[in-house]
Image (tube, rainbow over all chains, first blue to last red; front, side, top):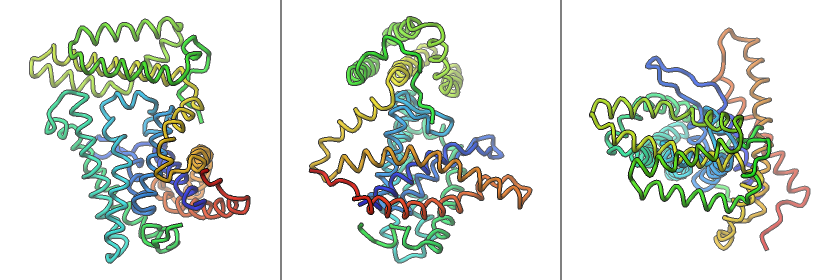
Length: 185
Length: 202
């Protein structure tokens, strides 16, 4: 249990640290941050249950008042703002990413991680994200979806980087990729 | 690590966290079930008055926390201006800004440890599902401690990368960063276990 707890805390901190990396501007002028990559990696490396726990820990401390969301946002105001769906969806996305990763154990790690990150970290995350935006801004789902399409290219790049990183970590420290080692400490 | 709490004490700091959280959920619910621009604006005025009552420095700090909403104000303004639906736009914006302002008010006047205490109390029912509150408290403390360790390690790696390459290397450091931290995690887990480990839930 010690090992699981430490890894959960570690990934929560990793997601926070990635949010502090300065934004990178795409040529379209849309900023991309590394934070959602941390969500994907929590799923591909820790697996469904622990990945979701790590992300839930990160979200809980953000809401409690640590300015850890990219751009230095945090506090309860996040729950009342337009991006509420993404924040609430983060743990769900990590869980889905990990769940898919665990199911794809027959595939090479990089491909499994890429597929899991794209479905869990983008498709599944965008559902509550769009719903929250539609609700908060009183728009239809398709109008809200339009607002977030500019972020799609950046998220696809992040899913690819997640796949590469997960593969590299698996090659260097196979025991640390819990979604593969199947250890239930 | 700087929390979002406003450091000089105000009368609102003295209120207990559960009371503020309950008041907040009441106000937010009211904002969403009374969908008229006027009600939102009256509540928004009340929020503004509360901020102002805590002093002008507090008011300025509070207004700064709303800066993140600008992109949405612009998008909504353009959309509703184009549709000619000004009333609708004003209603949505008044509701959004008011809800966020009240939530930020609670965040600004409640110390982080009080919030964490509320959080841990809220998790109590989940003990039946196998959640160990001792593990949760430990994970919270470790996460807060890990963040500056991560930042220091990232800074080191960035400098090492800069010494070797002319590129900024922001993203190139993520892999060595993650690998180093995973190794540290194993050491920390071993150290925890050597010291008796996490107390099992009763």
